[in-house]
Amino acid sequence: MRDTDNFSAPATVESLVESVTKLADEVYVSLATIGTALTTLWAGLTENLRSAPQSTDLAPLRELILGELERRGKLFNGAGVVMADSMLADRPRYLEWWLPDAQRLVLELNPHNEYFYDYTKMDWFTVPCEQGRRWVQGPHLDYACTDEYVCTFSIPVTTTSGTFLGVAGADVPVAAIEQALLPRFQASGQRIVLVNSEGRVIMGTDPEFTTGSKTSGMDRSATAVPIGAMPWSLHPLGSTASP
Image 1 (cartoon, one colour):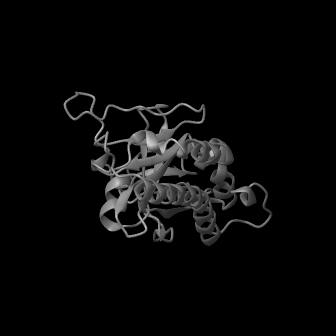
Image 2 (image 1 turned 60 degrees about the vertical axis):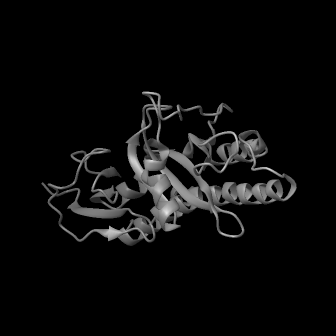
């Protein structure tokens, strides 16, 4: 969103849709890079190994993932790949997920443990797996890392023959989304909120509707405007000068 930092023309709803789309595209470009790297690595591993790859075989992805984290700066607070069930010989489930401080995220993946993290039930995993399309889930609190609101973006990753390997994903803090988009939203002179598919607020210019709040009781003055291929929409609520 480098092109939203400076602007002169008043922002229209249509231009705000474009700004949100461009920001999302930045995220998905990085995920495509990570996903392609996994597909390429997997092809080489399965061609040269007699048995299924192991979790340690994914180590070459580390530098590329860390490179994307550095490239995106504060836009990402974690990124990587999350493997489908039983794809690896040594781990039923596995994440090659890295944080900006070059630490690998380690979660409890043993279903018999009370702290079991079952990512196969998360929308950011199930939608790419079952529908073969990109997704974004959130805002939700990132209890595993930062305890802040994030949106988790993801895309499906498959072999060259179409077998689902898992997803490439990234956690994007709502604070980073606000930093990129809020000045443009404010320039519209409207009370306007960005909302997810569940009717929860991601961000906006109306202090009544904070991140994570529901919009079911919202008095809408205009029809919601969808954000392209994303499960988000903009809800104009009228001029900021309105009582």
